[in-house]
Length: 397
Image 1 (cartoon, rainbow, N blue to C red):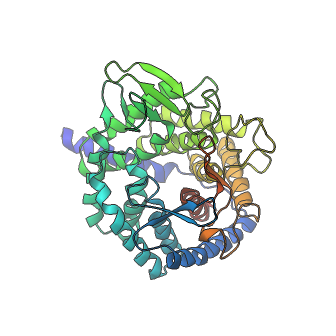
Image 2: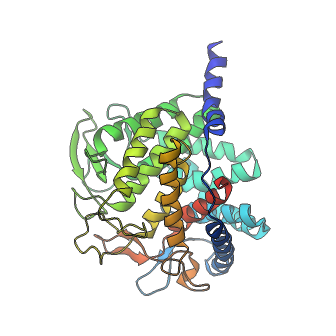
């Protein structure tokens, strides 16, 4: 009886989502623009498919303007095959499926990679989408192995998954880690083993406790004592300063807690997502077009660089968050996401066909303090942008 009840509870998130979900009112002009942009994205990625060498993945643009690629163990490796799955889903063009499968073959070895916290990005984005779109159950084994590998990085004393093995940190945990928890919640639903979900919830709860300031902006990195679980440092790595609000970090948190509410229906995660959304949308340094500066505390605002990747992640998250709140609040999130998508679809951020090393969006910032990937396209900006456009088309009514 207990076993039967456990499996019934596992199904509740999906069942509840279907009955509870609201859709936003469609903006017909944006719907048309979304289709135009997705068709452009498909043409652009057809060019990319012909330009990227077979043994690597597209990542960004080098300082000399050439295409920057990565190997399969780099943290962004899963986004390109994930985006090609989205484009296959939209166009039904088998060339995108063929491309996705070819690049996933490079990434598959990461199912046993225990040296990274980014297996959600690296494996769930491509293999999770492949499973969802094709129904091929062979992907389940790969994803379960990936979840087991990610779980090895969890420290029960701290209550978190370790982010990095490099540097002078003792046990660093970054806000980005919230994005990788969906792999674990999926693994519990698929396997029936509650340990994966327990790790995800514990990590999310510890992050609420230690990563956020009273205004619900987040630190980038929390360093813990692995022996005691005590917080040693609250720092940044890619933001302006330890005390500043790095905009992509805020977007990771917004998306991560929205996803965790979908997966668990724990109201604490919904409340956290709502608070983060309020911080972003009420921020006095948010530009009028709602595409954030790379850091909300950048000293050269309004001339600071934008981070389009932060805007794309936030837009996708806000569309989903709008489905879980009351009508008035949901409308605000939906309208904000519409404005973000309208901006991202404009010439200010959308590349011209055949340019931008075949990426879709321009003007992202990877890490300004390290002078790395500054004002360039980023593969994950494209991924979350295409996801947001597809979500908009699916959920608008």
